Length: 241
Image: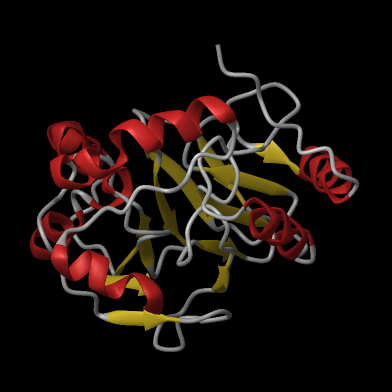
């Protein structure tokens, strides 16, 4: 399992890396799970949490409620006692188990969504889950002993949130990806200009590392390069073949 540690000892562990990363954050007092992956990976998720001796999870932060992030949310809430945190604009989706697909941001994905989008929304419904904490921009978990806060980073979808840990490492969900060389551009996004603005918002933090839900970690230099180029009309969009 990959791990990252901040200067103050906050530990971030990659619990699952299939399709959508599931990350566990702990400072020895408070435990946060970020996203949950697909239901079909639930057995592996259970094994990994047991391997880490995690019986109790204080908070489950959903960066957003798309199916690959939220399919195990109700399960984690019931088995590990986690309070579920989601952006206010995503509450109804979670409550109904709905997964509205984001728009395509490049030609191949735009065509894919146009052809299969409506059908996929019905196929990709998941077990509904009730949110416990409705978060807005800057929410900092006042009832918990942890140096962390949520940053609203829309673009991929309206309710996309990033978790800032110890002002050093950002868990960014699908606000960016790490799957293509020299690019953090997501091929799926409802609002590309807004997504780019969110990169700038993330750069205003002191974070040195940005952990996306898909792909590998992005360092600050890469994020800054992509943001700067995008402001001048160059999106660094990957070419999907």
